[in-house]
Amino acid sequence: DAGVIQSPRHEVTEMGQEVTLRCKPISGHNSLFWYRQTMMRGLELLIYFNNNVPIDDSGMPEDRFSAKMPNASFSTLKIQPSEPRDSAVYFCASRGQDNSPLHFGNGTRLTVT
Amino acid sequence: QKEVEQNSGPLSVPEGAIASLNCTYSDRGSQSFFWYRQYSGKSPELIMSIYSNGDKEDGRFTAQLNKASQYVSLLIRDSQPSDSATYLCAVNLAYGGSQGNLIFGKGTKLSVKP
Image 1 (cartoon, each protein chain N blue to C red):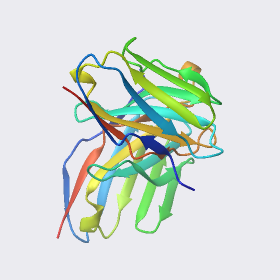
Image 2 (cartoon, rainbow over the protein chains, first blue to last red):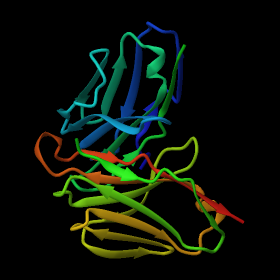
Image 3 (cartoon, one colour):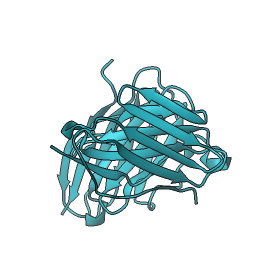
């Protein structure tokens, strides 16, 4: 299995620009999570999908952030407009069943200047 | 607010010693607990899962769970320099709108000195 695939690995953009992060979960997994990691705040849950439906988006910082999962094999996290405080590593993770462990992608390192 | 607490460290142990990492959680109904290891610049990788009270051993790693005390720990025996990393405790929430969410502690940085 190829594991969870995220793209791009690195993204550098200017404040105000739109950023789109992409994720392909492990085939057959029905839950997908987006996390953001910073030194100060650790690994924060942004949003969680189950069977392509958003279950809990209470961790999404503000309206500038949006996430979609149009099908079982693809999800996007969009930031529009981006701000320097959005700079972080964004991880996507998936799992097959409730209570099973998550499998993480390699992450996207976002830098907003 | 459901929380998972860990000492941030750094925890420094000599090579060959036992490293003990601790975690407490606030959601009393949680049933699934995980330990992840994260090397600098890398993504978290699963080390152990534990679901029942007591100990679970896998090689040099032992996870311990006490649901009554809302406490989970990870012991690393015969610590090696390659074990130097940040260890993340994760808890699967049990109730309400957050059911199914996996919440992480901020991690404990472990340093194993040769």
